[in-house]
Image 1 (cartoon, rainbow, N blue to C red):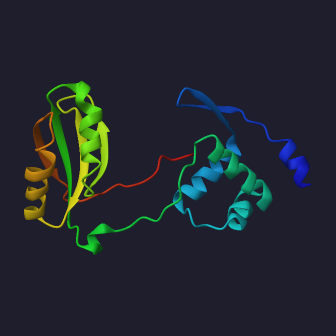
Image 2: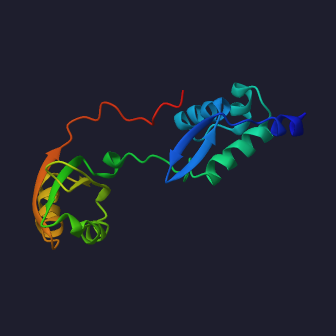
Image 3: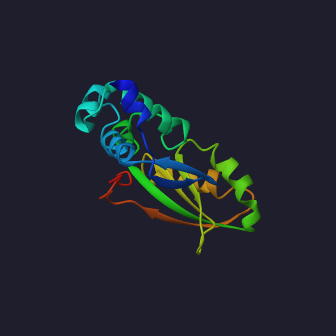
Length: 171
């Protein structure tokens, strides 16, 4: 019975996220493991793999969304097929670490910048950026990134191969 199944849901694991406790159990982790490998898998298939009803999967996924454990739903686009052949990580040194938010807002205006992290170590910011080729990369660095007030210097690391790309395992 579906109602009995939902009523017997127990949460025995705790994940700390954004200063709040999110309780998940083995079934939640199994669902996360399945959908992280294929976000387009029908809930019917997830239910079969988990041995529960489709409605239970719907409720569990909605609960995971409500807790903020799952966010968004998107397709992965291979930008290389769209002409962006060069992936680059850029280490950015700032005049002062306190300038981070202002610099990030400027980097947000550069569409080729797809990821930006505030870091420890030699760089205040590590950004991932795509460009069509080395000439385009140089233009982006010289006229966009290095012109941002507060950016003292940059170091460019071109990605030769992305050998591992995955979600955190949920098992």
